Image (cartoon, rainbow, N blue to C red):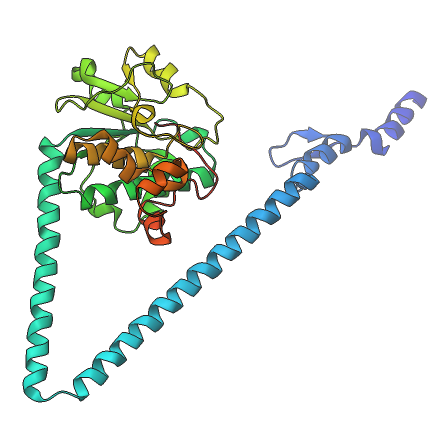
Length: 342
């Protein structure tokens, strides 16, 4: 009897109280406390000072970028409005005959511009089928930071622009074009969906598997000098903004796949003031210009910025790059980056 009462008192103590959950299973208070803690919000770990500095720097960059974009938009709007006012003022001082003649002239200008655009597209469409094949290997996108990826996309845009303006355009291919690279390029470059350029999610060695013996990977680390481009060969350029982190990576990967390699004959025609490594858009520009002229020296001097060449060669060209020329050429390395290329 005494033991039974003791058992009842023990069962009434908090430590031995059993709780029922929704399923009928019993839990002790300790188990209930642990279970409840699972639903408590876990506070994020505090950022280190270095991480806080990087975050602040990134925020300042985004703020400045947004401010520049807003300012450029405002300036463009003001320029458009000013142009409308100028045209209105011009028309107000004309007779009806002069207005009719002016409108007819503007009509001819628009027609000529439209015809020029159609001619360029026609050349590009033909080049996509029969032009010299140039491939941008984008398989290393995962190795780049967001800023490096944006820089690479800008270089691709400049490369396409060079091809559009060329009298003898080439057949441009984007290989391993997927994931982050594709997302950033489509977001960053307006009108990309209208580009006349081949796009492949597969790697270049898969796309051109049947022409493997015709594929040449261009890299500054190769011991073979490219004497001239062959119409039936495929020339691959490594698309990687790397800040010199991945030396000889393109050479090693191409060699492992059994792909031939070559370097542009830069040293044979031009003396550079620094690294032999050029941006992707410069390499594409050099190849496009060689296709049109078959003259390495002319192609190199016309494509490589004067600031990367010796003073003597720059003076031979007449003048240094103007800000407009630098913009047209893509302002290479303006962000302090280098590209695994030639």
